[in-house]
Length: 390
Picture 1 (spheres, helix red, strand yellow):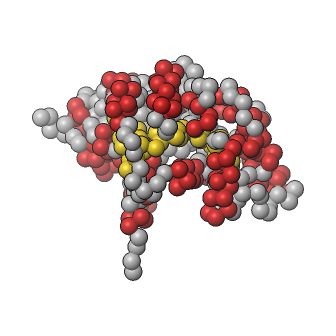
Picture 2 (tube, helix red, strand yellow):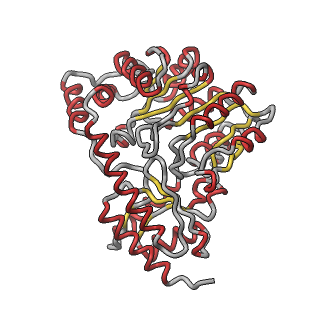
C-alpha cells in the first residue's frame, strides 16, 4: 500500500501519545498523576448541558447550516465584539467542530506550496504540522524565557521574506503561558500590514489570563481585514469533548470556509450549538470559579517546582501550563519526561514536543487537583534525588 507524501508530513501530538502510554501503565496497576493533557478537570457547567438536552428534546437533531446555525453565529459575533471591542456581524463568523478545523481551513485556503508561515516555537505542534502538510515551510520564531516567552519583534522582522504569507499567534500561549503585550501586537500588525501577511490568532485561552487584561490583535483598527481570530468552548467552559470552535474573519473568506466545511464535515452538531449559545450568554459564575481555582493551583505548582533543585519555573501569565527550565537537572527534555513517567508516575511532556527551542524545558498542566499536584511535586523531587550530579 502506498501513502501520500502529504500525510507523511503530519505529526502526532505529544499529549495524546503520553496519555495513551500513561493509561496503559494505569491498566497495569501503576499510579499515574496526569499533568500532560491540556484539558480542564472540571465538568461542563450544568446549565450548558441542560441546554443541549433541551435542544435534543426539541428536535434539534438534524443537519445544521455548514457554517453554523444563524442564532449561534450571531451570539459568537456578539461575544467577540464584547470581549475584543470590535464590531463584526454574524456574516463574519463560522462555527466548526472544535478549533483545530480552523487551522486546517486557514492553511489550506490561504497558503500555497512553497510559501512560508511564521510559527511560535516552542508552540502548539499542530501549527507546524499542518503548515508542512500543505507543502509550506514553518519558520520558527523563538519564544525565549528571558523575554517572558513572547515574540522578539526584531527576530520576527528578520524572519519575513518574500515567501512569507502568514504569521500564527497564540496568546496566552501553549506550552509556555506567555502573553503578548499590546506593544507586541501593534508591532506584529504593523509588519503584517507592511508585508501583506495573513494573521491567524489562536485565542483559545483568552479567558484564562492571570496578569493584566487579555488583548487581541483584532482590537487594532484594521487588523480584522487580514486576520482569522480563533476561539472555542473547550478550555473556558470545560467542553473539550463537545468539539465546538468558532472564528471571525473577513466576510469573503468566511464564504470559502463555508465551502470547505461542506466538503469536509457538512455541519457542526446542531444541539451542541444551542449549548454554545447558553454558554456564551448565560451565567459565567462557573468560569470565574474555574479561573480562581487555576490561580490557586498555579501558585502551588510554580512555588513547588522552584523548590526543587535543578528546576526554575516562571509564573505563567495565562492558560493552565507551566514550562519550567529543567536544564539544571543535567537531563535532556525527553529524558526528563520519560524518567518522570517511568520512575515517578508523573505524566508530563518534553519541551521538545513543542519544537526544537523547547529543549531544556518540560510542560506540566495544572488542570488537576492541588492534592495531586502536591503529590506530583514530591514524586518529581524523589526521582531527581536519584539522578547523579554532574
